[in-house]
Each structure stands twice: as structure tokens, then as C-alpha cells.
Image 1 (cartoon, rainbow, N blue to C red):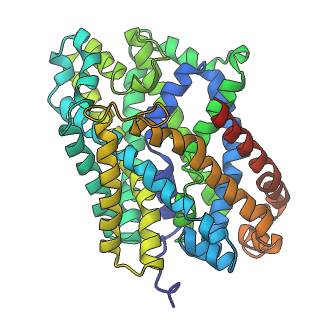
Image 2 (cartoon, rainbow, N blue to C red; image 1 turned 60 degrees about the horizontal axis):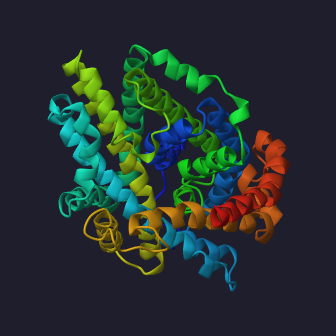
Image 3 (cartoon, rainbow, N blue to C red; image 1 turned 90 degrees about the vertical axis):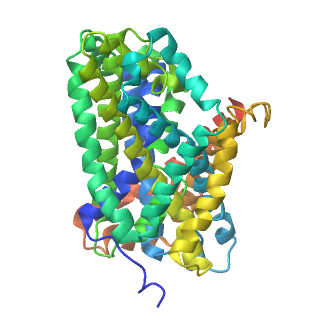
Length: 455
């Protein structure tokens, strides 16, 4: 009876839009450009694409198979598919991980709200360029305004989730994902018209394979993981809302293609603007909130109105992309509370909001009043980011791969992947995909995990 009451996405397009919305986030528009800038541009992109196909895609499918097979949250899935085992306790990790991530993620989402407000006020046009880069540090060190923005961001996610799967998540994804592509396309076209932009294009399309080393490979694999939200249960939970007649392989590739396209468009849009303004491509995590406002200020010297409009569009894009991922991360905890603790969706959403808001406030304060509080030498924000990126996501992805590759019956995996043998192309692909999930994915994840320990 409980399964019959579960909501489902309306169709294939709705599924792809929702999963693409989960994947497209700050990882694409914030993290991807600066990592590409730090690791050689085209060389990094080449490794990233290979990793997405042969590592991330099989893990994505493993999560999707578990989710649709069980039609349950991460805890309930393990309880249904491996009753009486310890797998259900290990699944608690994939409930806690996305909540930790969304706690500090929403702080960054809050920064995008502040910078959107600054863009609407054309602040980058009127602020002296030498003060632009210090503007960011001054804002995040404040005790109250970053928390106000963090609250607004997290509250917006909660409102969407309270509406439910079809009326909330699906409707939001159906309009937000197309808007994101339109916005980033406008920004990309404008960036390509800037003087010196072709130098940025060349940086992104001409690989220098001598730059590919272990650090670049690990960074590209990690970004591929991060971009598709793997290992934290979001794909599993969203797949649990997918009907049995849908093709998981098509939905998976559709999601991956949307995610890759958006990342590349964002990378080209950012890098062409960065090269045009003479900013170093390897500016690091501050590229979006420190270097790009400097780029907009430089543009404003010759075209103040156009620069102001582009900055508004850019930070709208960041905010909406952050919201789509924030919603999916929170939904993991909400689904668990609704299905396992029998809470009403509104109560479950508020509970998740309260917990993530509290941790998020502490993460925000770690840039200001709590800056002296350190965990293994890291601020609380840095620690949450570090443990999530280097451990929680890797361990979660490892567990999902091992579960599908070694715990589930091969016949059940085959049945779910091929829709009972009715999808001919999936049947032909099954052996290769199963091999990647069973052997390659756990091996590579283990390497990433050990590297996170050693680096």
C-alpha cells in the first residue's frame, strides 16, 4: 500500500529534467570552470569526459537501479533489497551525507543571492576595481547578512519540497532547467564577442596532454562525481519516483549529456570572459565571487549597461542552478522521514530545514566570528566540504556499486536495466555496464578514496 501512494514523475522528459536539475548546480558553474582553469583547460576536460562515461555513468546507473527496483528512500531500499542485513545501517551514511553537503552548499547559495542583489544595484559598475576582490571577503566575514542569505536560499528549497514530487520538484525542474540553458547560452554568446575571448576558447579546446598527471586525473574524476551528485542518494531517491516502463539507460544518458553540456557552456562562458579581462584562469574557488565581478567591472568601463545586465543574468543562473541541486539534496532526508518515520511531508521538510539551517549557520560563521574554531586545521565550512568531497561521496558511491555488483542478484539487475529483457540495446550493453559497476567503479573509487587520505 505504501508503494501505491508514492508519487511518480510524469514521464521521460520530466525524469530527465529532474535528474538534470539535480546534477546541474554549483558544481557546473562554480566548481568546473575554476578546476578547468587550475588544471590546464582542455587537458582537464578530456579526462573529465572520459571519467564521466566510464566511471560516473555506471555509478549513476547503479543508483538508479537500486532506486527504481525498491521504489523507496535510501534506507528503505536497502531494507527491501537486502532484508535482515547490515546494508540498511550503512545506508544511513547516504542520508547524512547530502544533509551535510546542503548545509554548507546553502551558504554558497546564499552568497549568490547577495551577489545577485549587488548586480541588480549595478554595484560592480560603481565600485573601484581595486576594491572588487576584497568585497567578497568583507561580505562573508560578516556575522548576520550571510546567514540571512543562507536562510533565504534554504527556505526556498523547503517551499519547493513541501509541494511534493510532481507539484514541487517536477514543476520546478521543468521550468528551471530550460531557463538555465537559455541564460548560460546568452552569457556564452556575449562572452565570445569580447576582445581576447578567443584566447580563452583556445585554452578550452586545445589540450596539452603533457599537463595530464595524477593530480589532473583525480581532480577530473572527482569533479565528474561531484557534478552528477553521485554517492549521496539523490539519484537513488529520484529514480524511486520513476515508473517501471521507463528506460534507465536513456534517462541516465540524457541526464549526463545535459550536465556535460551545461558544464562546458559554463566553462567557455567563464573562461572567455576571464581571458578577456586579463584575469588568471587558475584563480581557484574565488573565481566566481572574486574574479568575475572584477571582469564585470572591467566590461563596465566601455559598456556599463550591458555589463550590468550580463552580471544579473550570470548570478541568476548561479542561484537557480544552486536551487535545483539544493532541492535534490534535501529530498533524500525528507523521503527518509516521510517513509520511515511516517512524518507528513511538511513536517519532514521543516525538520530537514531546521537541521541543515543550524549546521549551515555555523559553517557561515566559520568565515567570521568562528574562524578560530578548527577541525584538523580546517574551518567548519572547509571541513564539511573536505569530508564530503573526499570521503562521504566516495564511500557512498562505493557502497552503491558494491551493492549492485555483488549483493543484488545479477538476474534482478538485468531485469531492471533491460525492463525484463524488452530493451534490445540495453540487453547488448548489459555485460559491459555490469562489468564497469562490479569491477572498475569500486577499484577507481578506492583509488580516489585513498588519494583523499594521502593528499
